[in-house]
Length: 239
Image (spheres, rainbow, N blue to C red):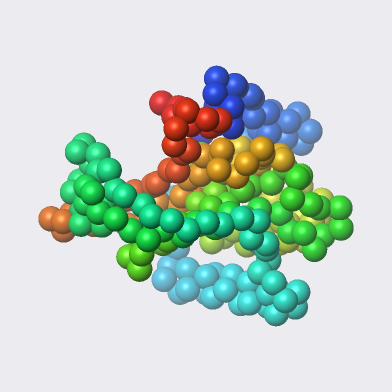
């Protein structure tokens, strides 16, 4: 990902420029940010013990924050939902899967949420924030997506300091996070949407790739996107 102009998927034909990378370089010095970029994506795989310890620590942190505040630390409040029927229209270019068989019908449930932590003073649902959508198709398929094309947390190590900054509302923690993970910070800016006219007008993406197995047993790394149907706001599909 670069800091080139990115498509704003809220309005057809509208463009905007994500200047996050440029601004942190100007504020903290290009040399320091370039050094952070060179080290933010580790090339050596972590050990199984390290991964297990980090994920267990994150799970404990989530549980502790939920117990302390009596609500989940992110996407705290559901702001809309609906239930209906989803009929699959399979794309013949994609691997065949019984999950997405052409004409198959599911009972569908959709939940919308804001990532903003409303327990922090001064925050509300209208402020710029990642927006979320969760979809359940029958009992076979659950999918959680956010606004923003690129992944905002590429591994557990980057997720821990981001959650600490996000849930606390601490400006100093945000600054430390931006200096340590410049590209993750840039991806977060891409996901922020301020006061959308409707949650159904936005585009949503799976953040991490998920494991997808077709009917022949072939395994793929897949990402999903949700776009509005019809010809209303947001219904265009960028290339």
